[in-house]
Image (cartoon, rainbow, N blue to C red):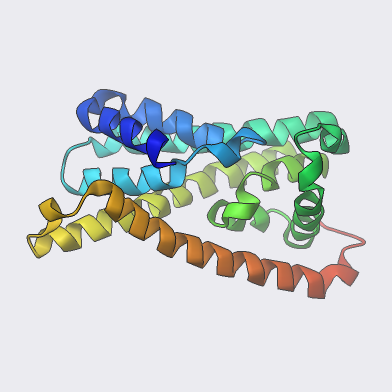
Length: 218
């Protein structure tokens, strides 16, 4: 991951005008089926939050690019699920994820539109929720409303750890002594632990509520 992250972070740092476009593309790809597992957008956003805190990047272009990327990524996955339904599970690259699809389906049936918001913040769910909601035929307008609103909340939430950490280090005059990748790594570990705990809680909650999933309300 570091081999991919460092040159991209360096490009963003030295080409601020393209930061929003590059980040938007990374976020869009991270939200999509199959390829999302290979795109480290979250640590890149942590780094970006630190660059925003130090004034290296323009916050307006970064926020716009990130939000658009998040909306497009989930939107594409949703329409793939809506177009192909459960047939997408026949794809050779997705067969190994059938268990995750089944659990995500139960989760989406149980929580309906709220699953869009929660799924943004839980790594194991992020790439599956939009596609599963598409297979469940959630109304397009309802999904897109949740997609846009959750994208805004998630982008601010993903940038906040790096931003706040950099501000704290800057206050103690030690920001220049910390390598950006080290900062991103520490923050990502913390976020990963929180996401793992959230994933386990979701699995437990879905398992307990499974008997009531016969008549979901989307």
